[in-house]
Image 1 (cartoon, rainbow, N blue to C red):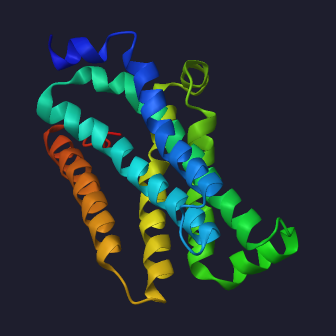
Image 2 (cartoon, rainbow, N blue to C red):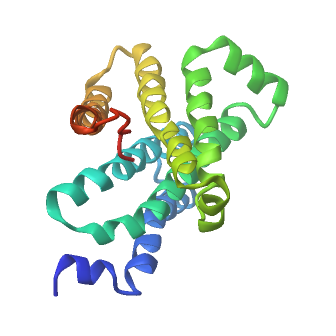
Length: 213
């Protein structure tokens, strides 16, 4: 059985759904069992943020992977990966709001205004909101394919803000090793799109080709 045929099987989406839920299950189990270390709150905030960035990279990887491998059926899984990215981003913010600020709205707003890394992280999540809200077929029909695709290119800005959020967060500890990995991955994925857009612009009579999601 080819990879495309397997990806088209009815079981592919439920399996992906369960796999993407496993990090949350592991964190919940760790919180209950007390295995998240000396600072469980920090572990939860950090881990949900890490998974948001990982899934954001995975979402951006789908199109280049389809192009290089011919596994076009991956497109049917991208929406779920994108929605899980937003889901983990919301969990990341809720963990910060609850475990760090006790859901004190005034304190949360002060922290966002005072600390740039929280501000850009909040902006990255805010940019994901319209993408999650329009990730269904009726929204595509309502907006039209061209406008829908243009809206969903906000994911690029969200990815860049996410890396900047991580960079500023780590700058206090002067530890940039993981930041460099995420930055390199996102740079490659966005660079591939930019190169493809530029080639399309060079070959298009009107020069109006747009980057691929």
